[in-house]
Image (tube, rainbow, N blue to C red; front, side, top):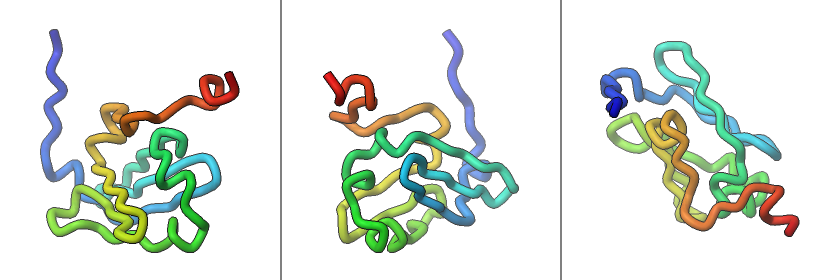
Length: 94
């Protein structure tokens, strides 16, 4: 078994962009981490204005959208942490 060892300095977020299909975090070290928006149903259901109203949380490794009660860490995107209840487009179409 392999354990993912991530240095906390690698988790510092510099910015966030939410499109119609993805959430993208720009990291302080220049990397871009991207995940499908369907992983986060509350964020996917939010208006364009609500999606723009994010803030980097105090430790710098997570982002919050207070209005919609959504909080996503950089580590969740790295390890593939979809929110509970998230359904892929194929599952949602069934």
